[in-house]
Amino acid sequence: MNLKQRKMSILDKGQMQRVLMDIDKKISSLNNQKITALFDAIRLSNREDIPKDFLDWESILIVVPNRNILNELKKFKDSISRISFMVNPHAHQIHIYDFNEWKNSTRNKSQFQIRELMKTNFGGTRKTSEDRDWVKLLNKNHGI
Image (tube, rainbow, N blue to C red; front, side, top):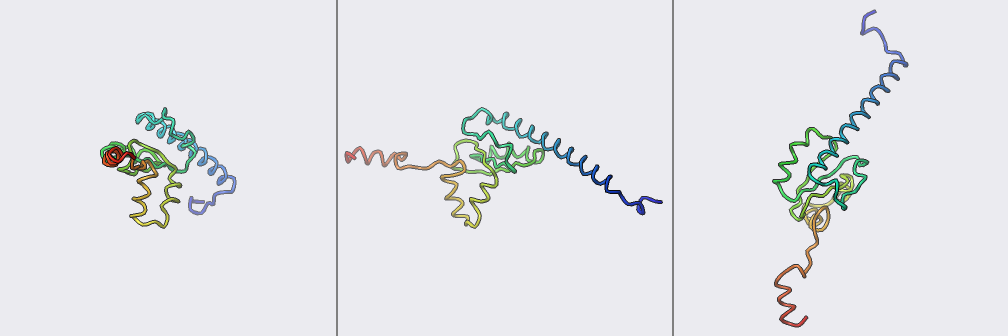
């Protein structure tokens, strides 16, 4: 009986599925170690604003404030699964988010709506009138 004619038994398939599942668990564990190592390298691990359950997310969105940082981190994109990158010029530092949260927030939105969303969410900081120098001068001159 040659290999093409021989059918795999149910027992063999079950064993093979268990072996593959065990290997997938090991791969996932190693990838989690890679993610943790990357976060340690970019000093995210000790920050209070970083969620501690990020390894439970299906995929992680790393939001960076500029293209220079993005270019530095993109080198790791191919070797680490479950991470994506986005530049938000309104961000002052690196942030992480659940990628599914990003998808849900931007679903059915136009480019303009997404740009506006990024000004106040996903690392963006809300600009208030108190931050503008001309408003401060106006308030001082008019006793407001």
